[in-house]
Length: 301
Image 1: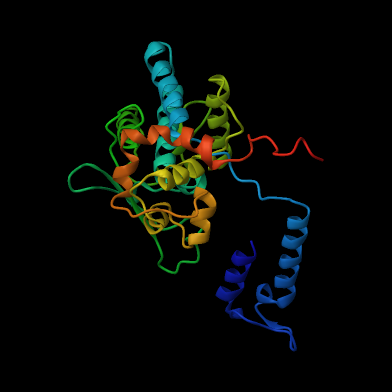
Image 2: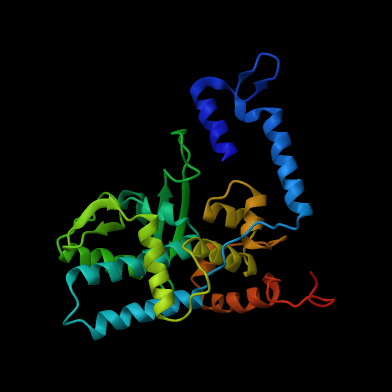
């Protein structure tokens, strides 16, 4: 939040320094702010308060949700309304795409159709984010990444997006420009507005709860799950992962991936599309978290 405030003041012409004598410049850079944050961090450390991270959601749960949605589309093909079918197809494409992109739910919701390009060999899509949580201010920055087709059609995000767009077109929804994922009204009208974070949250929790696999995940858990999966893979470097997910610092990449060291890489998108990412959840459960371990010397207080 402090970094965002600092950038806002800088855009308004307040520079990137603060003069303690004249009380002029960018107040977000005041030594008082820095000292306060340092004191809070020290106090939290002494109290053994650790930052709460999103519980990673791995490909196994994506598979479960995809299977459930496919069953709903098939078993209720005669009774399901167009609104319900649109919602199911949209949800399936959105969740798969968010996991394989490692994106924030808010960034996925702001994704424009015009920002999606097909790779030359039709092996997947290239995405170019020009507006997101970290791409604000109009300074020309962008986050470009690729997502490839998976051999397993059930979890393939490219196939899900294509299916969603094709059915929407047949239903009369124009998805040639504007937001890719949109809200739908109670009477079945697809709006021009982007799907909201609250709608994504509610839909994700609905699937997890109805399947009995809810362990406190949120939409951000998809981003965390992608980061951990990439870090566990043998083919990825920190630079590759940062580029794919859109992080600008190694500290942030290590924080999300729970990894202190990442090995050499070749192709992040291709690695995500392989079948062997299925074991990421098991590896994380065994080595990536200490929450389920018992205390070494009794319960303790």
